[in-house]
Amino acid sequence: MKRAILSDIHGNWEALKAVLDDAQAQGVEQFVCLGDIVGYGPNPAECIDAVRNFPVIVLGNHDQAALFDPEGFSSGAERAIFWTRRHLETADPDPQRTRSRLEFLCRLPRCHIEHRFLFVHGSARNPLNEYVFPEDIYNARKIEKIFALIPQYCFQGHTHVPGVFTHDSRFLSPCEIQYHYVLGNEKVMINVGSVGQPRDGDYRASYLILEDNQVWFRRVDYPVEVTVRKIYAIPELDNYLGDRLREGR
Ligand SMILES: [Fe+2]
Image (cartoon, rainbow, N blue to C red; front, side, top):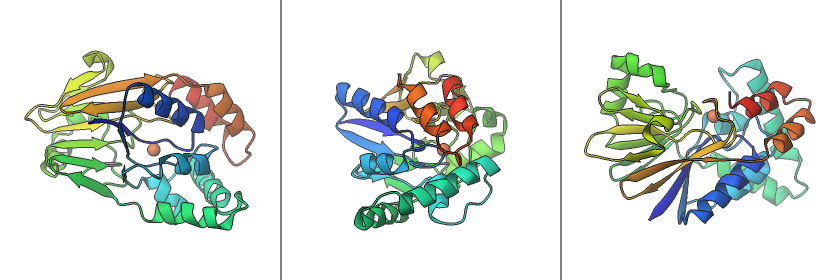
């Protein structure tokens, strides 16, 4: 079965729509979402509605922060979270839809395990909040401890930087492996990148397709300026959140 695994949509409807269209064109049969559906972006409700029927969805730190008290966020991120919460609570005139979106976020699990596969937002050690950055390959202790908690293959997001962490502490960027990786007998952690706010210098939406042991990283063009203009029009969302979309930073 062909599965699309996507993460960190962050309320960017234009990027999500482009990814869903691309996945459909690629013959994807099932979707997995690794969290941070909301936060930063101008369309949290639309993004929730688009993913809520995916069979596998895990909670991200911004999803949790939109429901409860945000902790450890920058002031810009915190303002965006409070706007997201108020928007989700008050923007839709239908109280039933409003309630069902909030309940949906409340019910998301912190991780999902399927046989040899683990799906989390951050890391196997701290599913909600831990970042595993490419430079962490030089922190052997951290990488070893996290790998010890992985059944065999772990798919994650949170850093917005796609790539493969191998069992022997290498980080392979999608570009250097021609956007294709084959799962072998060794453990790997694979970061799927971010749909709605990529931070690896490529502004295009990132996600991946998994079929049997084959992984394809995908990058999808979308109308960035439409999203940027929406962010500019909302005072509580810093203009910087729009500006960075253009650069993929
Ligand atoms: Fe995120």
